[in-house]
Amino acid sequence: MNIYYHSLYTDGIDPSSTFPRERYRLIKNELKSYQSNGFINIAQSKKAKIDDIYRAHLKDYVDRFIGGQLSDKETREIGLKPWTQDIVKRTLLITGGSLQALEDIYKGANIAANMAGGTHHAFEAKGSGFCIFNDLAICALKAIDHFLYKKILIIDLDVHQGDGTASILKGRNEIFTFSMHCEKNYPFKKENSNYDVSLNEGLNDNQYLKILEESLLQIDSIKSDIIFFQAGVDTLSDDRYGKLNLTREGLKKRNEYIFHFSKNRKNPILIFMGGGYSKPINSTVLAFKDLFTSSFQYRF
Image (cartoon, rainbow, N blue to C red; front, top):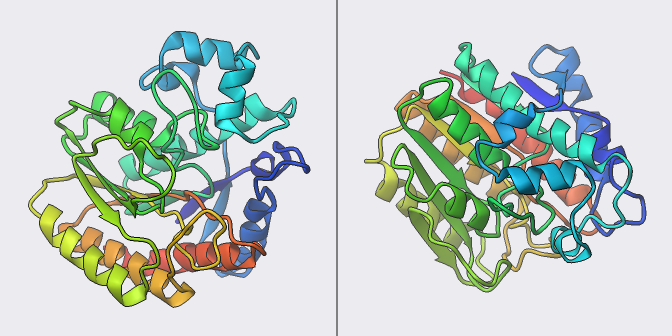
């Protein structure tokens, strides 16, 4: 399984930023032994082509970001401040990593992943919530328009709603968006996914997994050729932005539910990493390690 990564995932963020930039490098280090055993291949991300980004975003917004012309208000809404000189390259590499993983699946892989991405708060004409370009929407539209997939199912289990994804893909009947998220959490103005499941604060593993199981039954009739899994781990109990009460074991089971769901449908699965902000960051790192090291077991 290819997992796409670049050192700028970490180094492209200023060390003084509140965003936990070290998580990418730490996850990569945790996966080293699995790479040497041949289970996982950590592949180098390449920059996305601008024309692919235009599939989901207005040209004016894309060009102004690339040219360093966003307003202070726009950059504040995104976060990741203070921005470094590498912020544009970093963003293109993250989007490119997701597109490379999509191409792996198009060429026959059952599973592929990006060790970043899942940037589901980016809208057509603006970024927000640490998200600049929406790689889920970009990949979905390229999968439909270029790779000629018929039906895509996006399963977003980040603790925050995939509002930008829902907005960009609204009205695209070939793409079904499912978001299961904490109701009283960012974004405070929710968008309408095709299927939204709002969760109360403080849910534990058993409560969460029961709702997830019921939700997967509800969407099982939705046809799909490929599944996109936004696999944020900010549902952990010690996540600073989470408000839920899941454990590492609970997240392992959550991932198993999605992999089995995908396998039963004989759908390949593309993994986007999503959010994770525990303090200290070790809980996030280990939860993502579990995600990647368990995923290869569910190939069909």
